[in-house]
Figure 1: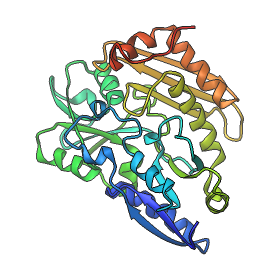
Figure 2: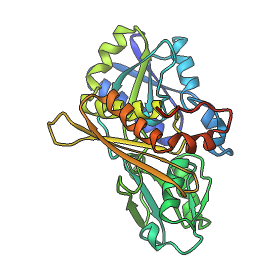
Figure 3: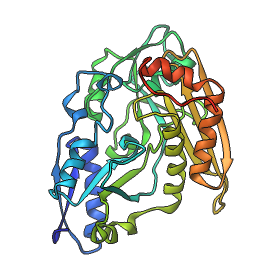
Figure 4: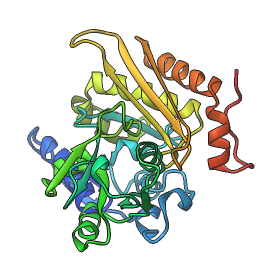
Length: 315
């Protein structure tokens, strides 16, 4: 590790906010820090719906390559963008304290999804959001919406969309809003695994970097997100499939986690939901996934992935 800590980040406004947040915390502890912008596959494919890009780690691969080459010391990611299994040679050094994990509906004219007119156009490129939104309102027209948060907000202001759906944490971080904001309850719109949390990735075995950033690790956020990512992995999913998973501690200071998970058809015609309680995060995530598979999740995911894709077998 060099004397100046080099953080690798995507170049979007939100990604740079996240990198600067980590840089500020490290500088406050006396470290010299610089940020290097790295363009990822996901950034280069802005005109293609996310579900069609088809690259695992589409927002992380090039950053990990720079990390492996020693060009950077740390990578800061939105945790929901990280594949459930990191490539060999990398380690998840810190899961920072989670912010609001929920999704938010934004509109200039309508206060909630229920108030949208029939056939209204709503922007999102997330199959998870699309599926749960259309389960609420099957008449809605979901429009692919790529680009950074500011680009998406401009699409809303332009008037060609009645509403858009974003993550509440991203909007809070950039201090953006719209005339009407409706935060979806978890039971209505289950978040992506890891949504609302930042991850710091390092080279495996880099004890110096681990020693620097481990102070930023938030144990309870890590436990909850470990359960979510275990469910996602068991279901064979990545960050762009119609799977949601959200875990939270049942009581403040308690040890029991409640994990809510969902698998849905992109058109919203079938939504499987399951809640599981337990204390051991990986076991909890696997149990929730197995319950969904038993209920037919494999059949739904097979249709999404295509016949050639490998999906979990029902136990």
